[in-house]
Figure 1: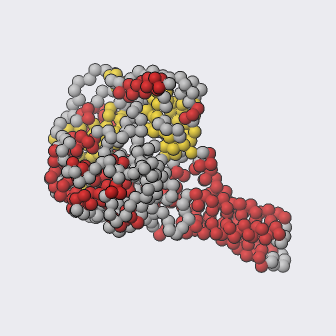
Figure 2: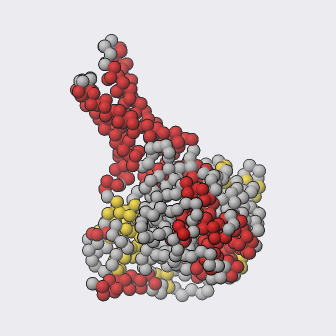
Figure 3: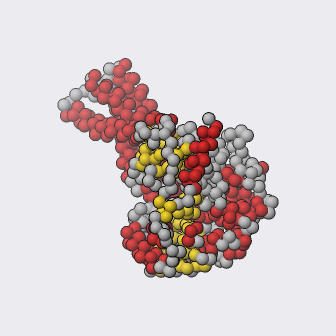
Length: 616
């Protein structure tokens, strides 16, 4: 058995690392046409997305080959994007600065990658949810600490100092450390606090003195509100101001010019010792993977590929600003794309798409390596899988409602088919125990543990869910409650009007109260469903509403919360209707149905953490 597993593992690893087959012999790539190619791409992308301003910086062969602005940094004032002066919020790209700072202190002996972080913390402790399995700095820098993505509502408005915010809004630990990559903002902010503790300096001071200044990044700022004259625009063109919150080391505040980010890329690509001894190599080298056959993560850098060509990636996103940094090792090329508008897609200028198309243009086409297919039972892998980043204790769990879980089915020939994992349906052949290669493609997936699905190059494992945990069922619960609520809102006033017109005697006081409660419950459900549903149609706007905790969102959540006690009162109303024979039989049956709808809605609201306050 062990021998078979080893053979399968070697087969899968060989399938991943086999030398690609060149479709045709190609000369050394010529990058002389890159600038014109990028100009054309940016013009088309900005027009399609309706982006106000953007910039692209490119490094190749150890030097800057492009640093160019496009469009406007401020539409109202007509200020053009100047790549040497216009500051953009870098978003989660700031995690690179945090990782570099932490690794510098590791090399100085002030921090250790494998020590329990609680040994460094003075004013609070991380919960010991998994005894004997402490969280370490290594876990923090590879997104494997296992924190839930909770305390999301209004987190960009939480202005507490870093240490206070980390203590006050500590998320639950929902998986053992090291057991799965799940993108994590709190964990990186915690790493930033370790930098403060070990250095004795505020995070921003340390980054500016030990990360920015040695590289000549003199127009970069690690504090809140440093974007200067560059205005951020939401998808509808509305300007928005930055709220930083307390998670600045994760990227909610730092800003930089395109030129300065070019300096940072140049240092990374050249393995510049000014980053710290060997730190560029450490950050870029793969430090964790869910399976040896899959690409994983370095310290913050994500290992991805496009048609067999390896890439390194780190992106950043803030309301109205987006950034994409990618390295193409085969071209010794680094590209950073920033934009100050969410655009129609909500993601600004898609830097990944730009680099993928550039790779197709300037690198030879590769054919996937031959793989040995294994015919074995695959039923154990079938089922529904939900992204591990789906929150368990925050209303941000709602993301599951607009992103259907991935579905894995058996094809009957030892292969599997996935739907919703990466675009449309895809077939995968098993090339090792629990390891599958995309048929006719380069992508790999694996099932490293029972009930867990990992994707090549992803920072998000998937966990199997039961039918009862499927978002479509929960949508049906909301839908049933909304439909019955609509009937109550329309039906009760109509019935009352008919009764008055026919001059019939009033129902008992208890019956009238029960109907009023039913009407209020239905109205709360309907208004919430319409308002919240409209908000969720625009995912970027919905995300902004959540992280900023807008008054509209809070009002809607209060309505959802009200349905819980109201539904309980309707249960008492139903019991009273049957025991005291309020209304006719059809009326009692109808009220019972309305009560079931209210209970369905309330249960779904509880399940998705819509009930408060407080709201998380």
